[in-house]
Image (cartoon, rainbow over all chains, first blue to last red; front, side, top):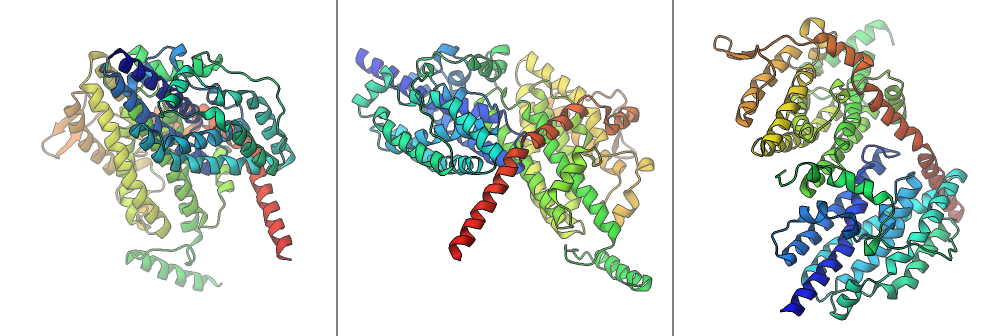
Length: 256
Length: 318
């Protein structure tokens, strides 16, 4: 009994490392709604945000069911403390300008697609089903962000410079995508989780190929930052949560 | 073309409208018809785009994941409405960039209601219920307007608006069935949005400069005052179901007329907001201008990239 309980907690944690990325990125994209460079990109980014939010809900509903303590998707989304959110640092980075929005999206999408591709074969049927549904959406996200990387990289001198600036700044958060937490390692052993560290090389080669096509330089960082997956976030996270949790914290225990 | 020929074309044109035929972009039309439609349709498109802002203000703070997704989808619908209304407008020979220019310079107007702030979550309910409700009353008759592209766009817009209105009402209903705090939040939102919603239906008939011509072209089927009465008659029973009080001490049912009597609208406030001095005029227009200016390098890049690709294709073909 105690070992089952331990496993289900690890599985819950594993789900959060995937789902929190979707939630926080959806939240960041939600900030942009109505402020895009044109209506078409505004609509596309809102679409991506909606997809990610839908995925988040499927994962959280499953995690809530596993927890079995009466918690709902909203309790998981809104009522944890910052240290309990497991998203990577990349997705919480701000919408500094459109180059950052696209850079963040692209660096995440390539990873996200690889993860879901494998997760479709998870021994856990629910996770496999969510992955199967999500990968269709994420394949579109990846195409959208990859196309924009090319447009901005190979557009004008100004856009090239801005896109390069964003890629250079965000690059230090890419290594964390392949960092394995205890929960991830445990789930790999169970045949439920994905050993994402094995795909690091392929990730960088895919990303580099598109950056080169976009006439952008591939950064050569020696140093990277991590922490989000262990709940140690950048200073941005507190402000994201202040918005995200505002209603639930101000008006506890109500139905909306 | 001689004056006589033009008169003749005008007579044929008016007769077509009278027979309820649709006017299509390539058809001959009087210049005034074209200008009036550019003005009204672009004003409508601008309202959709500006209207994204007050609701967009609550996307990051929506109280549940379900509400957050619904709000995102709603604001996205508004962007979609803007997109096809701009496209419909472009069929009259004006570009989207020119229309934006008119908005950004303050030459073109948009619905004044969006110059009010959204300060609580209940405002998301009140906007859906009241603002979309008033918009539907304004827009349903436009599904049969004489200009084909506008009429067709409005059929789709109205379907989505009525969904938004039900969604807004459902937010209000949930609040009113909730705690005392939630109900107070709902009442406060109604108090703030009621009068501006009545103003949305336009100045009183005596002051409305466009009505007569618009009636002839089926851009309007009922006068502003008739539409306002319809809105009030329809909305008061809905407020009763919510258990909320309409903030008008003069509001009462009139057995004789079969309508609600209502109090005096503060037209000074209406004109103040229309003239650009409402609570958020500066912020709303400022946000649009910023988005446009900040996005210039992105649009330029997309254009330059497309041109390069096109040139490469040509090279390969040769």
